[in-house]
Image (cartoon, rainbow, N blue to C red; front, side):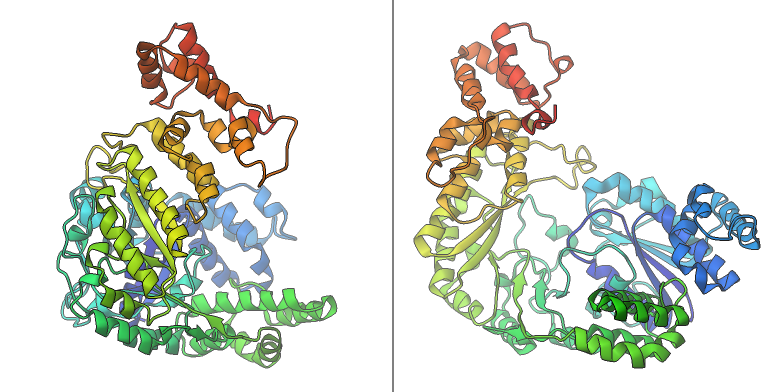
Length: 624
């Protein structure tokens, strides 16, 4: 091995694996470097590294099951962590582990030649900055610290000011970006899926090929950062060779997720669709899941990311044990124990190879792969303004699900409706979109756009899932560190009301008039009633709103003794306020802060209105 490389993603929740890090991992492995990936608590990771050194020193596989306890001791120094380990206290092992605890306290960690940190969301600013600054502790004095990604490209000066590191700006799309003289273009490299098996975090979107077939966008929308991130529009990026590489090295993936920002703008659109079909995603496409055992063992034999595949094999053994009858599972456990294959921290590849003749037949018997449907998703959405009948018909040749069409402005409604209609006429019946709000729009425009989708479902027989997406100015110094931005037509109560409804609908609005009207109201007046409504009444509307219960009487027959009509009681008193008092009440409610110390008000009518906003979820659930 040449260099030790550590790649880090901050410990925030995100849906997709970071393609940039996966490409960088491929790059460094091609350089014959030892690459490690981590996502999680870096303080715990530091203790894990030291604990791994402890295991290498003592060479006792029986301690494998106690890895979490030993890591906890190194990190926190609490002897209770050691008390559960038989014959450990007052032993030579305890003396040795204390030395590693001392190293942890002195920040004497295992060091790497290259430490790379990716950045994504600017509103996780503190977490990102803390990650970068802590990651420096893992870098050798003469090593290289790399910081890049979305936040780094948008706010490089702020990254540098708070970390002392000048981040890489933009894509890694030129030879020599990481090492002078190296001709590899990192952005064009295939993804290293093995790094995903190194971590405990599971991305919600997995089992998919990830990539681009175009780059950039020819438009320059005011709310969008693509022009900064990918300033040059690229009409075509080949995907077939990357898919073939993944199939050969890691096994076939179920779906194809393309992150193109505006594929309809490509002059090579037909070529792109034809290539997607060649890659196995034509209409009605299916695939057979790969044998995970075979690929993990093959990569282990090829000495490709042994850390990841030892961990993967131990997980596969655990899955085997869960499926076996009790007696056979016990025997399988003893066979693993004999070879030290119960825990990834102490398992050895040579023992895995020796155990293959036992484990392989059992795995193949228990885990037979059957044919499944697979889909293509242009995840960032398509531009309705560029939709034509010909393009929609071409799209219908691939197994697209869902078709995402952007609907960012109510003013684009005619173009959007036409695009959806063309999709339906071409046989594309499952659609989805993002509805930008809190930008320059009025709250009513969000309601109308959602209702348009519901009406299109009824009219065209399609299914459309709408995902309202709150605008956040990621480059504005006043707001990029938080999610506190308010559009000029919005207030905090309205934002919170929309989020409260979406929490109940799991973030999306589907087909069905009844569903939509219960969530957001049957007309604009009821929609605004919901926006102003106390949050607890929104979440538990069936309990607090008698009008809603009567409207849904035929559909929902379950009743509770606790059902009441507080929502309409509040609404009647709210509307009965004089114009002057109503404006005063709204000015308080709009702040979405309802503790008595949060506002100054002595008017008894307004105070009575505000009392409804202090009815909590605990009260609604009978916990108080």
